[in-house]
Length: 94
Image (tube, rainbow, N blue to C red):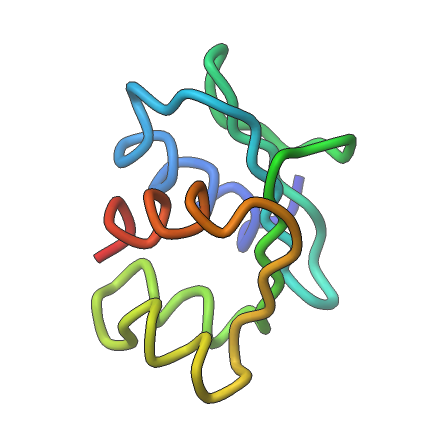
């Protein structure tokens, strides 16, 4: 894994401990992270919701400098799949 993915997995793992469902985070140019009931890891596969953002925007989301709703409304965060699950993830990332 690359350093960017390693840090993202670590931060997401701390925030998504009780996550129910399957979410995929696509960091453009770096890789893909899956989160489900077994944990958070670098992987690709089917998911209930897929969130796609640049590395810079994803970092800003995790650091609280960018709100998930703002990122989505301005096109900096793309959401495919279950919008209710995306909203739950957004609450976990804020």
